[in-house]
Each structure stands twice: as C-alpha cells, then as structure tokens.
Picture: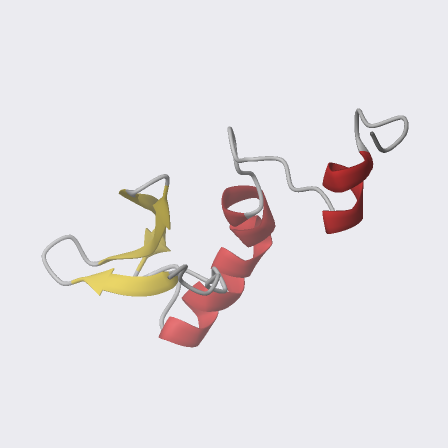
Length: 84
C-alpha cells in the first residue's frame, strides 16, 4: 500500500546553545537545515518563520531525480497502433 503524499512545509527551531533560528526539512531521505538568523535579529519564532518563507519555495520546491508521472490514458495508448 502506498503512502499518501505529504505537504512539505519544514519547521523553524531555536538552538539554545548557539542562540540561532534554523529551518529544518527532509530532502531525499536526509534531514537538511539552513540558518535563518540569531535571536538578536529575530526576537520571536513568528519573525523567524516569516524570514523562512522567503526561501521556502526554493528549498522545498526543487526535487531532483523524481519519477515522471503519466496519465493513465497515455500509458495504455503509447506504442499501440491497432489492436491485434
């Protein structure tokens, strides 16, 4: 049974040791991260999330090497000129 496709949004987390906001997401089975900024630059999680939205489509929108999908009708009629 196939799993349903997930909506990719990522998450914004705060690193207490470094006092930085980071954006985390999954890509090709690996956990990825990108530094958003420091606590001095973004005082709240909401401010950090708004900054993360600016690069969200570029990070999550690019997929490489995924399978090409066809409509059901296209796969049945491809390569068959007439029925035998």
